[in-house]
Length: 386
Image 1 (cartoon, one colour):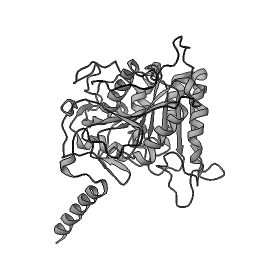
Image 2 (tube, helix red, strand yellow):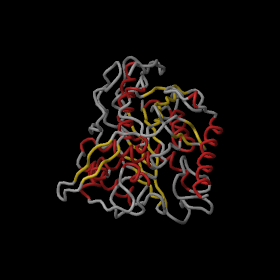
Image 3 (cartoon, rainbow, N blue to C red):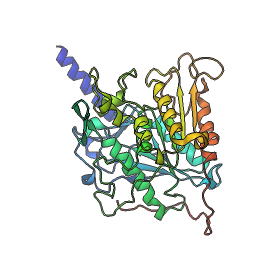
Image 4 (tube, rainbow, N blue to C red):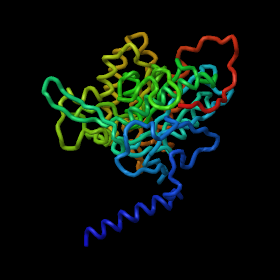
């Protein structure tokens, strides 16, 4: 009887997803984009779904359900045209924006979409990434601890997509004069913050995804070094002593209830990776609630310490870290409002100041671009075969 009830519940969930999104099986195509925001342009990371690394481990059809995108069968970018006279137009910045969701869904509605729209309103060329989820795709890499001999496998589809996305964006510099391949940053929320931090820590890392282009018709430029990084309530460390163990960690292969040595967790902890790649460490913005019950504040603290150590006293002045206190006038906590997943900020708490702080505390203080003799040019561009 219990099994029968479970089957009925599972069927009702599937029906709800189909009904809510309006997606029938016959409409599930590689180029299907659920609920695209007005005025955006869509760019697949790979022109052909056959070129996407690895194989799906379950049947996938990209849909939007309760504000989040799930079941991604072909990762893509959404481009948001920057306004011509924004506060940051003269900085000629581009940003890749990555939503969180524990690496099993993308919380686009409350995180990456409004963030990309906000950046575009400032004059930043914004790209929103819809990436694959590790549990649903086969690409994986061996991870071993030489000191203990311990081994494990890490699922890397999402890492592949972030790296590929940055290459695709850099390639757009040929046709979009608003994009400067040397001035592309990454912004991520929660699990998306982890992906952004890992990319910022080592852009050219080999994820088993050919950095020279992979499948398709053209060879992409190498992964660009990020010009800046913005991390909102991010996951940073895989260290098992930092509690709670995040869903992000479990999604890439660090199983709940199992112990992992530092030799296994350090290569997937952004603070440890960036400490050994200081030469390319970008200016950093971090904001998180000190009382965050989903991603321990230790995550942000460790990343801040690591990057400031890389930058030294002079460059570290450009880094910006705002740990919102538990109580008082700048508190991030209020009755009925959580300490994690606040996206662009909650008006009932002090978290709603972070977009302004990100603009004035980091982006405006970045080194300005060299003056162009040919002018700013057009911001529009056409599709590029990938």
